[in-house]
Length: 146
Image 1 (spheres, one colour):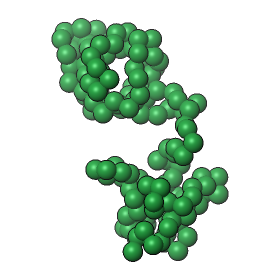
Image 2: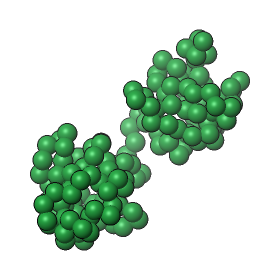
Image 3: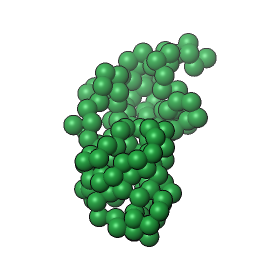
């Protein structure tokens, strides 16, 4: 199991420490364990919609307690599926003939690999031929970059 992003702490709602989850990426049902700012917490209450979840976590009794965490990542344990990687696992990988991945950026429509020379490679199946994190190597289809 790996910690993955489930969303971000959004705007507080009401007085009981509930808040909206921004950028939800995983279900946050009641009883779900998660990590927020290195603290292990549990979802105590879940309402709202899948697109705009409203949750209350253990340890947050009022809106002021949660307000200071606005924008922070909510992390849950999940198994990565076929063709999924953590950004941290991609950083430092060699892209033969192009360079090394310096960081992974959130683009408007897809993630981008930023190479050490500033080159941006869209992290989509049309551009990426293969990823081998064990060998620290990413093969890119050059025709896609031309």
